[in-house]
Image (cartoon, rainbow over all chains, first blue to last red; front, side):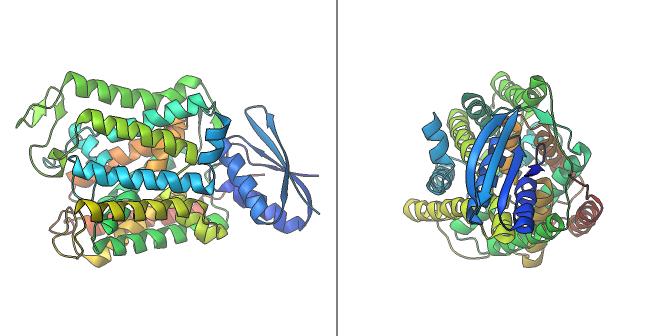
Length: 71
Length: 364
């Protein structure tokens, strides 16, 4: 499982990093760590726009762990 | 609570917030704010710099309660929805410099992105050059972002760090109440007040403050950002934020028509000049600085309200930038650009290019 650590990064870095990883893998599962609600929403929105499914969003520490997946 | 949170973060949510801002901006003009300047974050930060005496341009001095409301409204929303996250430490000096040059660029055009939209909605054709410049500047910014530009991570910090900007704004409000405007007087205690010009035109304090609080609250929830609107459109072909921007423009336009505030043309537009090239170049500088700093001036205020100390540094950069701009003849006036406006734009672009080219840190 690939993990993207986007904690502490400001807009639009979390989305850029996540999209880069999605492009690289093509499909599979990625976990993205973010530390703001804005980043959580932006990453989820970007994933869905690329045909990835947001499987789970879990609070973790000061932020969230977002699991996205594409079959 | 969760429902409200969800609704405002949707497409219709951000459109609703755009409509709300557009309508209230047009109404604020009706209620006393300058023409095509119902809300202008750059102009209002500049007026605040004037009220504090950081510059002595007599026509643009007023402690704008809208700005105070933006930060405090955002703070309230962030606390209510448990999103207040005190954070700081991502290259603050760079954010300060970007704030300074963003303001210098915006004052060459005479407006922030919000006002560029409001000027267009009021019929000011010069705004087209400004908006084109803004998009151009943001486009350059996206090239840097694609090439790996970033200012590094923030760190979580003391709650009180996140409180500093809201407290500064509360202090400004306190000063306004202790030293209220005296009719026809240019000064009241430590605060300066314009007796003529745009700085003398304002809605009643309580109206401005309440509107500011409401917008700050809603914009924090919806993440409304004009720079992000163009950036996401260019970078990701995403229209989420852009739909909010468009809603603001259309709502303000329709209300201007209804209120008789729509006067199409280029010459003699309120608080505007007709030098197309410099309207373009000023906003190109501002757009690039916003893109490198991760938010338009409004968004920086909302982020400062939710605890982002780096956004707060950008805001202070803008206020200081307004002082520099007016003290050293860089700001435009309705007659045209200032004597040092061109030099300032060139210096600003060079500074932004230096920042964009050299600040690429590994994030993994």
